[in-house]
Image (tube, rainbow, N blue to C red; front, side):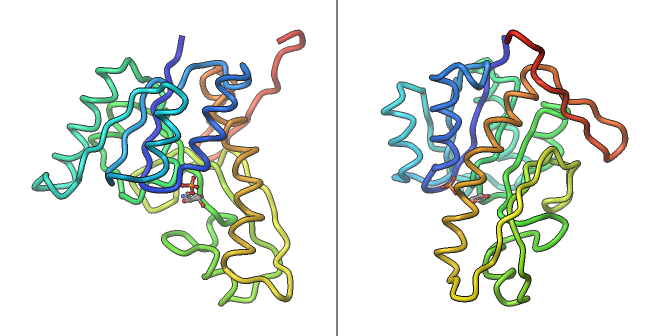
Length: 206
Ligand code: GRF
């Protein structure tokens, strides 16, 4: 059976959606390990409350991104992880992590990629003046928020939206599609054809 590992840096509301889905049987796999690159964040408390082992690994203690990722891989493997979710993990990952878990690293991003990659995607959307934005779950490749797309949800931008109000409405959608796509991945329902991904439906009776 698959074991999901979640990398976080902050609030961890997406982590919570995975913990809840795992508890309810919707994920089809346990969340077996949570790793944060920052100490004292709420995500770590969420892991503790759910009884999931967690660790803090500060990237500042490593001479390079690759050296940090090598230790991350070692900690994930030590907990039997085979599927990795970047859930608000504010680090660019390298080939060291991606090669260790081929096509098994997933990211959630708060825009309709390829629009607004990188930081502050909600603010980017407001500044640009788009009428629709949303969120994207994608497989991670070496680029910035550039891997094959598993799922997207659209969210309307309202005339009086602030970064905060828009962020919260996008997050509500993130919390739906992230567990669904992680369930598809661990359930072997993801087919990749170049950049095009087909997510097969849950077989009847499951
Ligand atoms: C989310 O908006 C996610 O899309 C982005 O970082 C934020 C993390 O939020 N990558 P949380 O820590 O899961 O609450």
